[in-house]
Length: 92
Image (cartoon, rainbow, N blue to C red):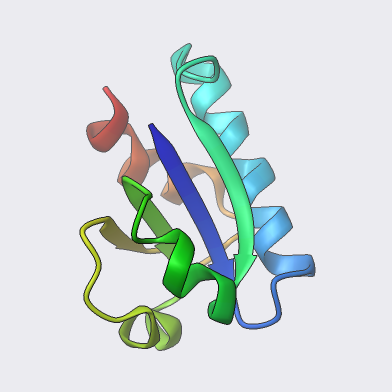
């Protein structure tokens, strides 16, 4: 399974989201089954075509466009609880 964590610039916040998603996956025992990568919005448009899940903010979700991946809106990239709540049903 492939997850792409997306922010506007692809440097700080997407890496933070990636790390928090990986923390959730470790807790669920899924970290060996899932590859998480960080991307800026430009890269994400291509990466999302081969991803299973895209984690991003509400304002960037529309910019990703039509992709086969499940696009999940994360309101607070630092809230591991929110990420766990939204990610758990998709990877379990």
